[in-house]
Length: 176
Length: 176
Image (cartoon, rainbow over all chains, first blue to last red; front, side):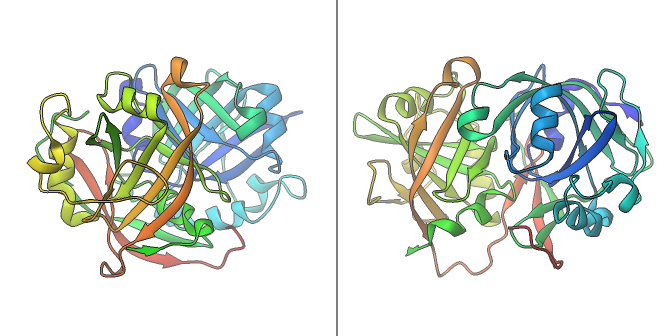
């Protein structure tokens, strides 16, 4: 993994890909699939996300206040589905789905080696957790895999239907 | 425009398309481009979004507490760019860019006839506006244009670069 400058993080999250979220709880890493996330600030990069209190990851995220947001490319789609359809209550998802943990630098939860980008995040605001399950994260460190060139991401449309990134268009714009 | 059942709204927002946000202020409609949004709840559909206090739309949204989220298809990309690169402080964007207003049913800001989906929204929580510019919206009514079949949306990757929806894949899943 190669470090990504923090001001570039928004380019990964803004297009709305399905991501994986890793947490650590009593030494056991877990991972969930997540599509409800958005950028909140460019620099330092801040991300809001919804982790339901019905998810096993919820209490780990709430108590430890740390997570990794890992971005899978299209080739991981079938694993993403399996991750989304199972719970860390029942199985070790890293082992069951053949995902490789890499140590993070600033936080305890692991990166996922198979993902093309990994963001080390800390919870910076929990005031809307109770009412909306919304966590606000700050990205402390960002990594990309130089071996995965221009990976296509997937966008969830419900019930296992995903739109895969298609053509890239470039229009003249001042919009960051 | 045809009504869309509210429990289906998440399928439009979850994949992360660029959207347009309309507001009304002293009788004048305005529109901005927005990529920082996420679903918060399926039913009633709730959406979080970031509208910066540097945007002209901010005060209209904050004071009136109403907006329309309109979703443009790929063919509107060049207009989306123009909308994002101009301000309602200076021009009437509806007139300048040839967008057609349609009346909403539950709120005052207009729908956009050229967009394939329009969501009438009311602000239901402003507690993170001051700190993060985050508004929580509830979708009161949703519309789609039956004349636009399977429209491809666009996903912003920064500085006028967009990824257009590509292939759709369908995997077996219990995930809503």
